[in-house]
Length: 57
Image 1: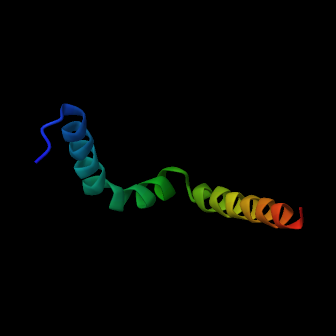
Image 2: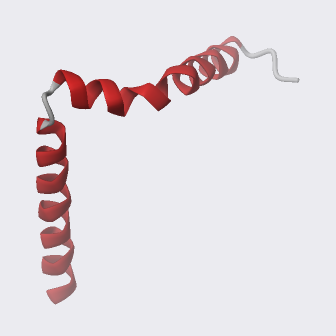
């Protein structure tokens, strides 16, 4: 077992995030009044365009 304090802190943060992450998307959707779906779609679209441009070169 690793007793490194940095490793221990990282593991603690991972456990904490895992405990709350399943609710993150729902809360983000509620607090943004659904706008999060729009910017996610826009981000995916822009990233796909970047990928297409890279393949041409």
